[in-house]
Amino acid sequence: MRVRLLDATVDCLVEYGYAGTTTTRVAVRAGVTRGAQVHHFPTKADLVTSAIRHLAEKRTEVAMAELDRLRASADPVGDALQLLWEMHQGPVFTATVELWVASRTDDDLRRQMALVEPIATESLVAFGRAVLPAQASHAEFLHSVYTAMDVIRGILIASWATRDQDGLDARWARARRHLRVLFTALLDSP
Image (cartoon, rainbow, N blue to C red; front, side):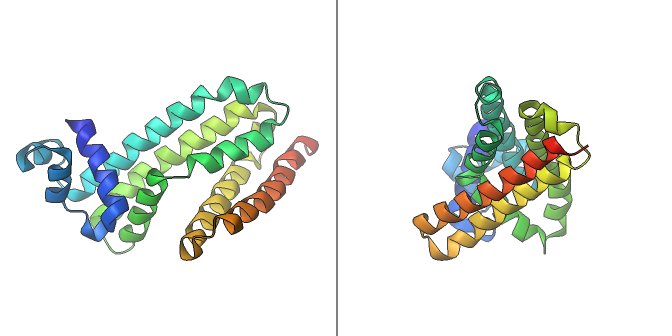
């Protein structure tokens, strides 16, 4: 029941946005009673941030399953960047952006997101360290991972205005080339 509620929450965030995602709408979509929903998640903020945490954990599991393949890759930096790009595709990212924007004006949600966001981000950083251990020891590695995530997120959010897939692909290809230079430079510096 808990997983159904979490999945229904993400679906509602994507379809209706944060403002249109109500606990009643989520309960109906999950096929559970409102009482069951309240039992598991007392507030809307609890529900939506738990859904993002749940999906971030699933996303991390998927990424970690790719670890051996990436370590054996002829281009581990490029392939790790591509996987990071792919991990930001789809409903999890869309729902997360809804919550980032809504947390700007919703104090309860902001407090919840302040707890969830570092967990989700750290899982991506840990993945990066596992794939690129030679770069991970560099003092700038963490900043480089954050820069990669910021670039990816910015490109994806901007693409919602145009819905131009060819333009999106071209922007990512260009950014990936530049990010590869950044990570490769970490290998060559002390």
